[in-house]
Image: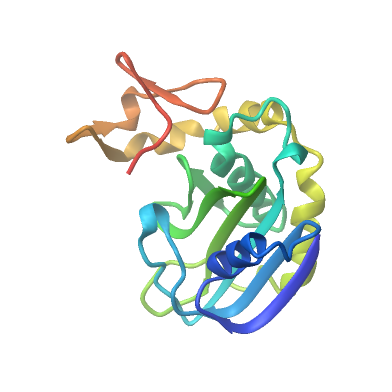
Length: 210
């Protein structure tokens, strides 16, 4: 993975997507920004910048993804592996279905994935320091490049089945939360995580929630 770092960008995801559309990406690439003022969150919402954060987007060819990974579950796949790397250095972070990073009941980050011209583009934002928002455990990530290199190297060690097996054991942490679906508020207490990454509530199979 080629890692390129900028002091400031409006959005690492939009920058990388533009490079892909302009045919300027020839290998898996990660764009990192120390600051970004127009970061993209879920459903196109703006990601609120904190005093210090880790903001990056990376791309890799779709053909390099595990054969057993359903594309609708990419955020779970990349998000869970990212969570595991944080846990490996002592964080108590967990992955709230399907693409939010939490410590206890507080959101500290998020994952968003898109498909662009044969590439998967995954953007991740993580609060490091903030006066107003929850953050990752203090002082865990010292060197961003080293952490990201470890993360990207670890992706090759995971199939979707391996991620699902581990995540299904932690899915119960979602039970204290609810979400909106078809103008209803549904509880995760009634949700079952399916082997392809969808959840089932009553007779509904759901891949996308808000």
